[in-house]
Image (cartoon, one colour):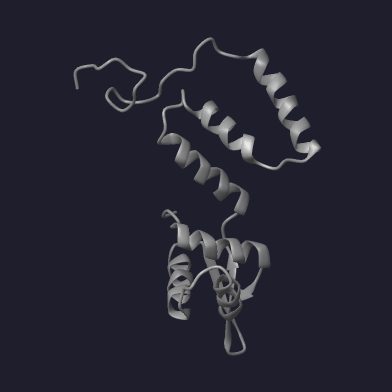
Length: 144
């Protein structure tokens, strides 16, 4: 599957939250946050259909759109893509900084604590760098 742009992601979020939905309803929802024209949103929808992220069928005169991709799976892939572009020695620091600002329920906090207890049993002495020589600061300059 081709990568989904940030704007296309916003369309997908509407479809995931709504289930089967008309383009006019997608437009109404997105207009509350963005000043995108109808044609811009329809172009985004069309791209998502081409990428097979959205399916479409007719209901009377209206076209109805439905997600063909699983939301949770795409979220995991998006996060993995971001983390793959960053030295893995930096992952924990970045996640900790992000978690610090996130509102969390007691149940979510307890789930993290349980996970950390399991991770603690298999902790490494040093997180290995996964970068090519010359891509990050943690490696000494090597001949390229």
